[in-house]
Amino acid sequence: MKTLKFPTAQTILLIIAALVTLLTWVVPAGKYDTLVYNKETNNFTQANSEKSISLHATQETLDGLAIKIPLEKFTSGDIYKAINIPNTYKQLEAKPQGIFEFIKSPVKGIIEAADIIFLVLIIGGLIGIINSTGAFDAGIAWLANALKGREFILIILVTTLVAIGGTTFGFAEETIAFFPILIPVFLAAKYDALVGVASIFIGSSIGTMCSTINPFSSIIASDAAGINWTTGAVGRLIMLLSCLTICIIYILRYASKVKKDPTKSIIYDQQQQIAALFSTNTTETVNFTTRLRLALFVFSMCFAIMIYGVVFLEWWFVEMTATFLVGAIIIGIITGIKESTFVDTFVKGASDLLGVALIIGIARGITVIMADGLISDTMLYYASDVTNGMNKGVFANAITGIYAALSFFIPSSSGMAVLTMPIMSPLADGVGVGREIVVNAYQYGMGLFYLINPTGLILASLAIVKVGFNKWLKFIMPLFIILVVFTLLVMTVSVYL
Image (tube, rainbow, N blue to C red):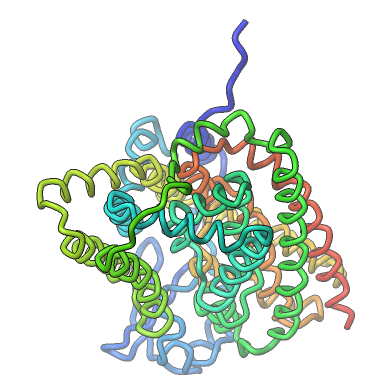
């Protein structure tokens, strides 16, 4: 009898998509009315499944709709997406999704996620070009020698820097660019690939989970809840430092164990496969010509420019993708790669990440099924109903769990904020706690589940290093349980302070 193998990421997502398709036959269809501000006309548009009406953009209009958000949050552009209007949920005629909708969902998802998919493919092409020059091999060899005996610094540095990016500007999707770059560095330091994945992915997850000034999370959620983003910021900063310390210690313990005895690695059976995947020559001396030095400088600057653009210039996927494409072309010119060779190498590099791109598209297809089946708002409506009559401590923990569950269906942090905060934040008033408790629950609940959420980025991240989801779960579950218990304790204590 053959041993059953854990399914691939693509298969896992297709199974989830099939289950969600079945849910559309069971869960009642429903929708909240939505409100969006039109900057050109200085009016609100209230829309439902039947009609849309124009309303004056005044504070009185917002108060009349029970939306406790200052008008300037809309007019300044802080809230630019359509928000759900409280007390407007209506059940609609069921729209169960059938076999054809299920089949089409991955295609629709790929189309909707085209921006991040092209970013991933262009990054793959850039990496293919820089690898072909030999400069990257030499750089990794130099770094491995420089850190000899102090490799743990790499773990602390990467995890901390990525977490800083997560807490300040929502560094999440962008981390896809760093896996192919940093994993070989961790391998050269005699760790396994899981240490590299953990340092990058967990760092990003904890940073976004404990967002402090992240405009796509804490700021937009606070705005949608009708409070200043600084309310509760100190608590989130303390939470960030605490969770980051816990995670770094956990990764260091595992890394130390693997370094002393490679057979202790959860992915020891894949050691040769992964080493071949990220094959780098860390022993042979490479003659660093001026061209290679310049190529490495351009390569590094692509990431620096990307981060600067996202933080200060309001860049998003189109600008980021263009940066990497231009970087690849410049490196090709500097190193004198022939045009035909450049194209072949670039395409080969992009094809290496095609599987990752497909995973992102299939995951987005799941949200397409839920949106077309009109069940997302129904989930939100019943979730908000659960908290009636709870005491403070139970409420704080329950709302955290609700947000963790909702994040399976709405993995976008900004989307979750604008859709749920106008509905969920007023529940805090009835319980007698500050609305920042709901903002915290939203961040912590989404952040915790993000560590294992198959509709998030974890499957795409694991696909880059060819590591199965089951092995990730084996690695992450002890840490996940520690973080859950710690978070629930913090939430319980916070409502009584």
